[in-house]
Image 1: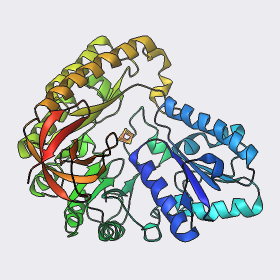
Image 2: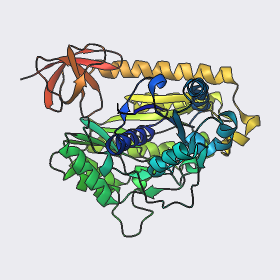
Image 3: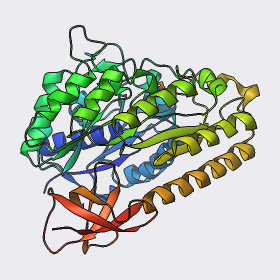
Length: 443
Ligand code: SF4
């Protein structure tokens, strides 16, 4: 019987990408099958995140469940990796000595070897080194190519040089490292040969792509060259840093019909004082200028963002500036959170400026209510419009319906008699729901 692998992934799309490619490597090279139950797993992978305190807590609570599973089945190999391990590896070893492999954010490529070593030596293997490795060695992808969904992630860059004062990424993933364009093109080509029609290019700061490798192409050229893969219908990317979106890139986005009309551009705060304390390296005025040029070049662009409330020293006036900015830019969606101090970051040391938890949570409620109202208004405006939809599969809630996305990243459900997965179809919107739209096929 095929050995079974159980995976829990927390955090961002890059974590999802790493878990997925790792499973596929174990599947292709070692015959593993995926299981949704810890109880019958031979290998467990816990891919952790450290973006907020809640993410840490989730990982530690998963470790509690894994402790029970390991007691019942000591032969099971447990590997725990990712950002939390990179920032709190010693704590994980202390609290979970039963974990067989403790690995950081730069050991994905080595994981099969580490697992094998742990299995043979029957002792905990720890590898969290960020500096002694070949930083340009990204996850193997040729050995991980199997059957792929219509829409896939492809990592193009890892790490960040920005050092926002609230963020752990430069410490957990290290400095910006760009993957070689040849590898990216090769992976995209292989995926599209296997049926993938859309790729989302991932990086913490995709606009900085290529900057760390002399003589290498930049992000704009990379996008254009990926778009040349004939079977590929659509390209998305995230995340962009507002201070790094050049006019030249905006032009390229507008000129290339394969690049989707959706941009995720994190604002974080509407107050210049707070933006400065966050070390975001742009002002609200500069953000506004960028949004204006984007909307001028692509009037139908949807814009989503990230926002933090209750950042140390945020006043009610600062928060009002964030509400004003949300009203002004009318983001199509936003990911908003109360500030969470992260160990070793600058902002975590400004304890005397921390905003009272009740005040911060009340601000978050107000911000999210405003966002919901904007989103509902914008969703209703889509009724009667027609979109090209890339069909991804059955709708999650109604198996009689198919679901897909338009270029603007709206999820659209519609009834269909035949299997249209992977096809681009024309859909007219009939009804706007909170997070999805419902439509009908237009012949
Ligand atoms: S740009 Fe993004 S990833 Fe980089 S430090 Fe700032 S928040 Fe973190």
